[in-house]
Length: 260
Ligand code: 13P
Image (cartoon, rainbow, N blue to C red; front, side, top):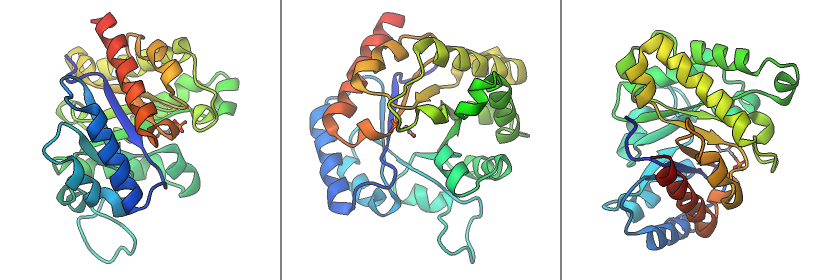
């Protein structure tokens, strides 16, 4: 079974310089402890990773990064390797966020290489996928999700899949305030779990954590997290304030208790 649920991760995107990031991490730490169940992950921009790690080390809070390159080292100006992220205190790394696919032209093939490189280390990938508004309106959501899964996870084994967290983030719901309805999100989550079951077996499918992302707020977290296949959230805007981030976590805890 899936462990340490609910799983709530805050993707700070390109927000917070080092002092601001340290302050936010300190507030989250002060207000979240003692944390006895679930998983909370802070995902600040690169320069703030190690300073945030210093705040949250020796607490149950976890650290993640927003991107990674697939090579171990070399002449790749501007890139950061999986081992560098580990050394900065990270346990997770986002791969394939739609903003990287859109603005930095990351392809499914790039994403597959990144996932494989990260799995050579102790880091756990948070693999993002999701459809555009046009795709949804054309009735092709599940087909696109299937293609993203096939290409992103190409030539991985079930023991690899168990280390991957999948984040379903419909592009039309990111930063727009237009959250997917619980039924819309559950449909895609169930489809993803079914894809994993068919390709990697039922026990792997039961083990894999699948997050929803896209305008998750304290007032919609409970109804989303109550759905059977939604194990947590990847939160953008609402993760930039300790109170809203932790309220989402509390709502998710309540929903998880109800589902157990
Ligand atoms: P918002 O919560 O701001 O919509 O962002 C979601 C997201 O992209 C998390 O990775």
